[in-house]
Length: 410
Image (cartoon, rainbow, N blue to C red; front, side, top):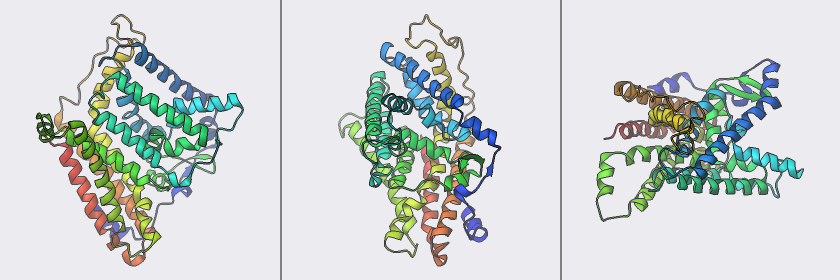
């Protein structure tokens, strides 16, 4: 229905990207760019990192260690609504960004310049592989719930980011840091943006339309969508019954193959659908998947909300308690949260949870259809502006139905 409405009422591109938005008073930009505010946010990121490192390195390897909640819940899930609310804040919160900044100032070098320029042909591919490594560790690796696993993964991630930023400068983070790239894409759906250096308020779809185009963008969003689909699929009783039985294919190998299969399925179907019926040839036709890949971001955000809402709101409360005793001694209450009780408001209301899941999925898909349609009528020949989107319509319907089936699979 949304596609039909758009086909008849949205015949030309209406989104203006960076050119859109209403500039806020100058004092807003001054406040946002102030050293005090930016320094406070950076300090907050360092404090949380130091607190977590203390728990990770000095505390026991137990489920009560808050390290697990900080990485898997507060960072991976919690940064999504935070980015939607305040915009792209992760570059300030990132402890590795801050450490890189401190090192360059100490050495008297420029943060933007490394030993050599970042290779343009790499694009977002390092971030895509980094995201795949993270979701594989979280969803497939059998010892993902061990603190030692989290520490090992983060140390490897930190080493790659710091070495890369030393070689290529701060631009390495913009294309290679899996968290910065993903949270930056999520922030494109916020109402805040920049134009000529000033803070503006604009339609989130205009913000999304201003997403920088580069190689590997489709791979990044495909990893997010495919991994979320795999997470739901791997929790189904059908999958558990077939992987829990003795003998057969190694569960880790099988999980890896299925996870990669979901990612390839998303990328393959979206890429093929975006090119089908376009009437374009040569490089212009092959560029279409990248030009339309930004439209998958709302679907990824919708899946995160549908799949992880209960985890964030309920397990997140429990880890606030654990954070108060980072060494799990049972004797300390540094943050004063040890006596807090977890509210299971959503768990006892499955009907509400179901409605929210459907709303997140459908809302994300509706925004995706609008974003894809606006870009399509801009880049496709007039004769194919509608017919060239029919394959994409089928794929989007498949994503919607498949996503809902996986969310409610038992």
